[in-house]
Length: 399
Image (cartoon, rainbow, N blue to C red; front, side, top):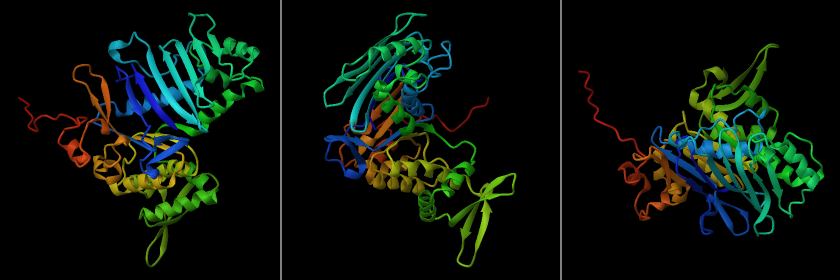
């Protein structure tokens, strides 16, 4: 679960921009999770903004920081990561910070890097509510070994530290190096963190080709998962009561059983609407979120879906998940009129491009000072909250 995140000098983001998910304890139970006693985090985060305002870049940055922790480069000449710095400060390093919980233990991670090398890493944690050093890493120059210092409470032995120093290239994080070298049992604290990121953090996900066959094959083999899918498809009013994975010995297809008052008939997945396929694809994330502990970052959730279906999806997540987080971008501004959003404004951020700096700026909805009786939706529609395109006259002059 993510507690806090900030980034600076990344794509359209110049100055430090933050998403803080910590909320007051009195917030409705179904809107929050309690990863450790006395700490409450929002389950939901929605970013709004005009096209090219930088909505997706915040999600990319959030994914980026976990990718850096988890993914090693193939060789020492690879760039640290594909993300670009802000165009006007390309000669300066990118900085990212994320605070998150793993099995009730808080971790705070700070990284500073250029395209060629990582300048600094600092990972701190709170194993007994007090801050302790997990590791700190510093850059000593090109073609020189990095310096790595582990906290005394972590239990990493000097021989293991030496192995990590020898294998941590200037474009690798310390934790990602753990994933590519064999280390003794005293590295178990690193294994716990590495495995959690691999299994529980999921970056920007978007259906691209409409192919649900691999997904439905997995569903067909899992009775509990299939029961969930059938319930959701029925509740979504698609008239789908079942499905079959069919094979002719060479190719496989998915046939969906459609039910009418008089008869049942089957239609292949190729005949289903884009919205139906998108909803089925998004059910994977929803099922995992309500049956486990996951952080999902979904770009344009609700694309191709009817508004009521998107709202239903979010409600199912909020009412049924116990330890997951959904962070998304959206263009569905009607959500702002819903009580679950209007009364919990801390789950909404507005992204806007600054005219002065061309940098993306993100503001949480409860920071605008709106009276609780004022509609968030109406305030956004009239431009009081920014994050809207400023359109010119509809008349076009071609002379």
